[in-house]
Image (cartoon, rainbow, N blue to C red; front, top):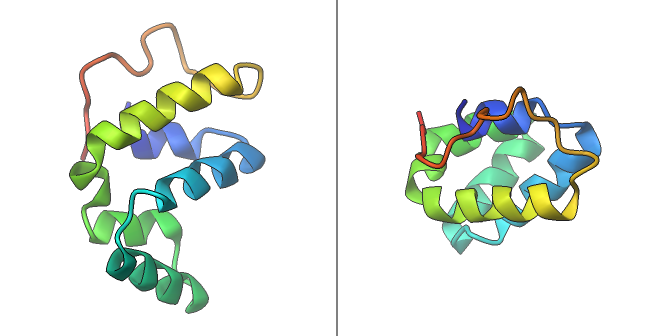
Length: 91
């Protein structure tokens, strides 16, 4: 499972928390580009993929996912016990 798939399967309230945390990784140019894209009606995931942010910040993303899983265990949706193994599978 990719980070993108993991985010997509989470409940909307948890997705907002995830996107908020991801925004902390970004530099000003990346953040401005995404904010302008969203204001034009584009999707967050597409904008992040366009800039290859999931690859650029893959270590930070894995840490953030681990924090989310520990802080919101009752809300996190996991497909199975090995739905996101230790090795990263970013696309």
